[in-house]
Length: 74
Image (cartoon, rainbow, N blue to C red; front, side, top):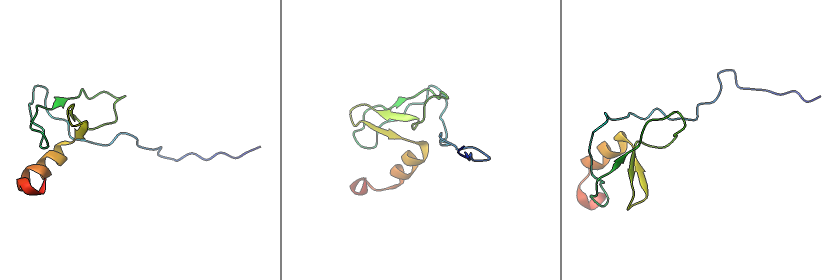
């Protein structure tokens, strides 16, 4: 018989991203198109913001960091 081990506290698969309020609008720092705000569902494990043209996800923290940098460093 095999002995199985499980983590006492379990594993956390969904990061604690800060989710903006519904209706918030932001533009992509890469292409300047409007970002899509993804619904915060238990089954979604990605970042809150999605840019369809760039095929890239952004978190609030990503956007804040990118907004602080000069354009030539983005």
